[in-house]
Length: 213
Image 1 (cartoon, one colour):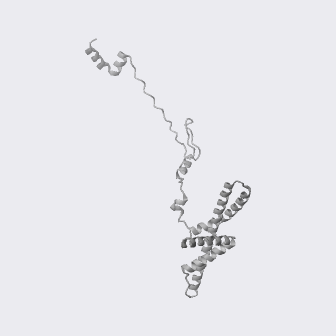
Image 2 (tube, rainbow, N blue to C red):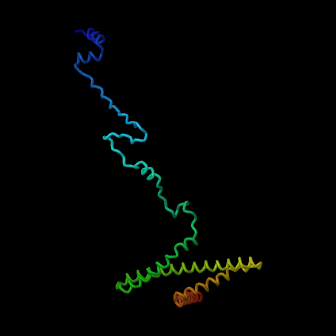
Image 3 (cartoon, one colour):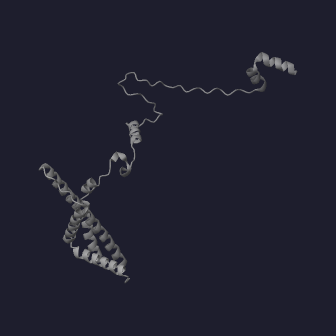
């Protein structure tokens, strides 16, 4: 069969039939599309039917995912939503920490008697001193606030009585703070130690001033 006859036969039969008749090749059968079952509810009050081949989600799973997305992690120390830092409110709310420190100091004293290692003893003493100093600082702050409150109350009282209030100068306020500080040191049994420390410090200044050191 000549080439022209082959081309005429191909035109008569068509390319697909010609391929199957002459070359013996069959095209792959088209994949049947999976029929999707329409799982509509006959009644809106009935539960929806689900295919057993598809995993059914847990109850409320969608809501849990939504709630998880809504969770926002933030540090309240640096978040504006937490409000402005108020040292007076902070000190009052955490005043109980002073008692905790006192309790820790008592425990460290017992531990100090049981420890024989010199280096370990120094660490315990350092920790004790740090806790004691922190408590003294907090007590000093509270005493200062009480002094300022009394001063404000006296000013308000003078205004209410129609009198001219007396405003303390920096020097007078400093003198009152020193008196309160000495009273605090006296109550904690540290007045003599504080005075000795001040005496040594002043003596060192005097020696340096006259050129003895």
